[in-house]
Length: 174
Image 1: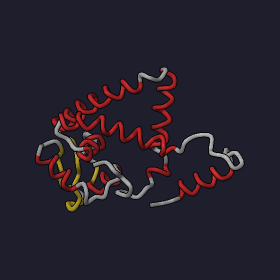
Image 2: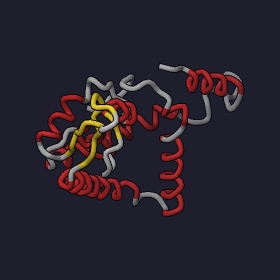
Image 3: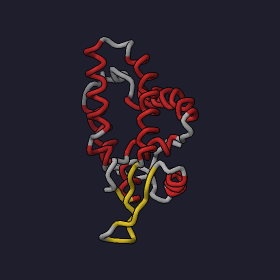
């Protein structure tokens, strides 16, 4: 795993915002985000179970577009999974007719992935149920703080330091 972001974070922490001999003025990001992430995943699990999905299967459905443009390798990279890890997930989703894997007309070794109408319906229904639960948590924040939080999370989620991470390393979605 690339340590660039962590080296930069450590250097910044050492250089500023730490009172001499004291603790930093805020908790570490991971100390705040990891317990929240675990709680959110635990809250999602009954919804996923009710819809017959694993966390990996749901993740796959969320990342597939309706047009067959992603290869299995590109999907694995997008969801930060080892490409060999998702083969069984893709096999199950294809068997259930939630996705299609078709040979690429330009390179028959490559499989193009797409959602079926049923896969799209299941993805959308599951996501709506999960976000309904999230709304209860977000309702604790004033509207401006809520919007700022969602913008900030999206910015960090799409940060090059995070998106450049090697697939399958350190990912815990099961």
